[in-house]
Amino acid sequence: MNSVNIFLAIAAALAILIGLVHSVLGERLIFSRLRRGTVVPAQGDTLLSRKHVGIVWATWHIVTVLGWAVAAALLLLSAEPSLSPLHIALLRVIALAMAASGLLVLVGTKARHPGWIGLVGVAVLIWLGLPA
Image (cartoon, rainbow, N blue to C red):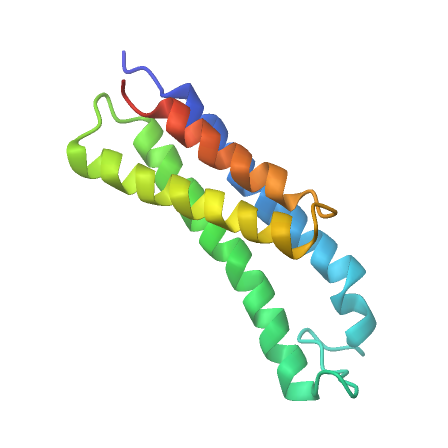
């Protein structure tokens, strides 16, 4: 019976949760005010024009989609009986990207947005899941 790398599996679950919360709360707290009966928000103002609101919305959800793609890769790698040097290198890249993303949220919001905790948590879990 194959064992699962629990650290990578939990990191994947956390990445999925972060993406879900990111998209749902973004829709409720930000984009719902910029929408008038359309899927893509189209209400701009002096700060963001209508076309800019659309690309901000798309980019917001791209982050979620890419986070879920990372989660899928982590889940697949969590089931590998042994990690090859390539797998380990990929996991390190993902961990560093998650840590850097967390640092950006930490600095960009002066630690007022809790997203940095989840992103750094994913990075730490990946690092813990690497072979010794």
